[in-house]
Image (cartoon, rainbow, N blue to C red; front, side):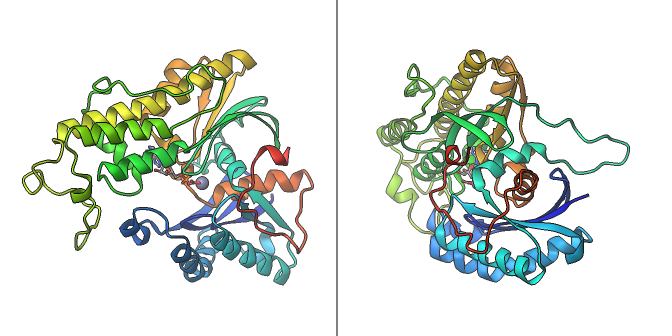
Length: 366
Ligand code: KG4
Ligand code: ZN
């Protein structure tokens, strides 16, 4: 049995987790900063790093207590080294180094995108139920988060080939920006998913950029198309983003702002936007599945918790589709511990000069 303490501070979640043998979650503690950043409509980097400093020690202590782990029972410390916000990454990296040095434990540096993928290896023990089967290589992987949209071919642990990635906005970034311009608040993905319920996804014919151009994605034109539609239909953007007392991004009642689109129009816009993003992600994954003969597709990253994406991927892709539960799609440290385990098994242990890599990519690790 090998227990790894994972530490994640790449963006706006301070997280720590103990995972055994790279798969079984013993604890998974996340201190979310969403409420702190909401007034800014996005993550405020300096505020994020200061909050990580405040939260990191209690979060690690909580993860150790919940896992009933002792420092002696740990086999290694795994920490996200990038990509992410430099100030935020530095907090986790320095705490991880300190613990590893003080407890004479090996230190493993983990790529955050690889960690998202390894959320698909995780499970929580349920008495009477065997652990789920592990994903079988080779795999097609779609990582869709706030900062990335990558379609990858994964031939083995740690071995990736990039088939496509976004040329401008990431999928999650598009959700966040469109939610913001529609006055739906932050984070945008869950807000748009909720607003789209009951909306007609065919109400607006939105662009599917780069549809016939390989496996790269582009979402910035789609965002602009929604902006023009919303403006054209009388969405009072300035009025809607005016700061209120309690909830700055709260959507005012239609009676207070008669030029707002009706809730129905909003639902149609949200549904049409969501369908356009999902359509492109699913179609490119479907084509790659056929071209490469993939038998299994892994979804990962915050956008992988989108219900329509999951549903359409299962319906249209002729391969078995796996995705983590929503709490493991968004940032957490269990995925860092899982990826760290497989890196450690491969002999990949960091030196004391481990540094953060805010712009790290996955193909460079292969
Ligand atoms: O993976 P993640 O937690 O952080 C990054 O590494 O970026 O992803 C956060 C992103 C945000 O852009 C958020 O709006 C999006 O994931 N997201 C969703 C949903 N839940 C989170 N996007 C669409 N539908 C959702 N249900
Ligand atoms: Zn992430």
